[in-house]
Length: 266
Image 1: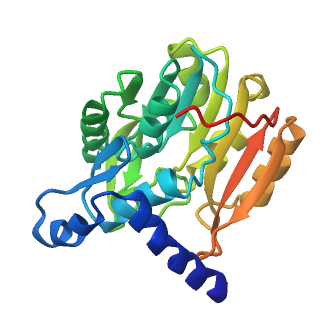
Image 2: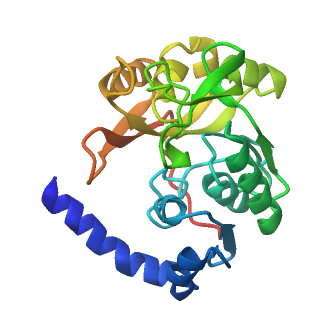
């Protein structure tokens, strides 16, 4: 783990230097709080702190959610659970301009930033919904005790030392409310809530999803990534796992019904 961690960090430096056109502006922007904008080709994101920059790097440069090569139909649907500042949702919308992208983010400040970035990138096919996705509908406590907003959680095993009441919807309700009959790609980064979302999901809804990419967070709830792998494989997905090179409790699971590689159309 130690060797892979340092290799990952070493590889990340040239990747960021190549991929972020205004990288020289980031250190002074972080120091002064002014001009906090990251530019990656034709994408541009406002950010709050260094963690946001790292998140953008992992989503858009590392492509940890394997957006490249995933088939999304014209008129199809991409669902982003835990949208944060909007990096994945906007990248998906730009890559698939004829698709509908639903971005769920429960923390108000992050949802506001997501909406700002949607406007900045002129991705009119992104719909930002200020809500969590989980078990049940109504309201739930969002644990905001972490110093990093990207680590806020509604998972049942979260610390809940400091909570904010936010709206929550089940994935079944999302499908019903937004008239979704098929989801081309479901992305989840929701700090442990991925287990209760997917492990309790009705098979009829799961059968309407073509591809899933998620970051798993072991140790937050009683469930772990192995249960997710088994459940998704039993539902007919081809499942692969990628370990996080730095944190043993984190990693990525990719599940696809039909593995289709398509040329990058950008």
